[in-house]
Image 1: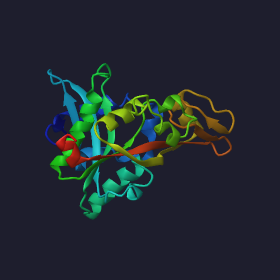
Image 2: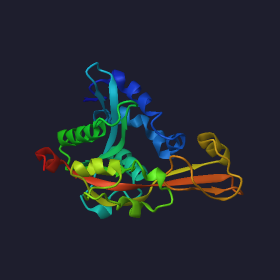
Image 3: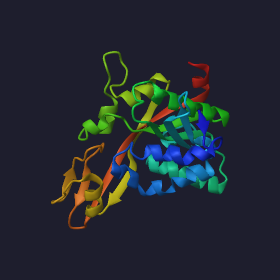
Image 4: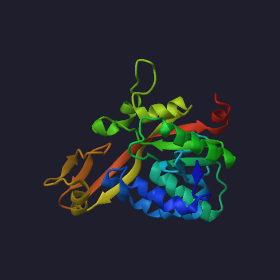
Length: 249
């Protein structure tokens, strides 16, 4: 594990490797325009994992926030709110005590080797270094896009016969000791013109309505008269207790 602070010369490479990991529309959340500030202001909370040949195999991005441990006071909207809260907190000099996981990407060809769990463990290490009590994650379930009409609260409750979550990414966090705190129903909001959405998805939107878009966890709301389409993504807030994780409980 290396942080951007430890190896700043590879920060750009790490960021570039993540660009193809998401559907194109996911790269157009207005809040993510602040992404460069993660490297500028929070370099010690951005990490990458390397193999024996020093090739980057995974990247994790996070931001510190102040959180009292009450699920009712989690950054309300989810990913967007947490990002904005972290930036505002630094500007105002608010002392953080939790780390928010913003992104965890396993480089293509490396999936299925437990590297996703290694990224989360690395974030727990960083949170521990900072003396934080919690790692909190607005988790994007990895298979939810296959069930875009199913409410997130229902999907997140699906379980296997062994009692573990149905969704693989929720299951990774669960096995590392995280618990579900609540659903973030409006975690990300991505608006755009119809031309922009056609470019991002390769789809046509001839009439107003809700469209199932590949890679989206919820349908996209289209308003032809206003030349507008908006995607609102739900996530699942999961909480890791850093001290508990360090003990291996």
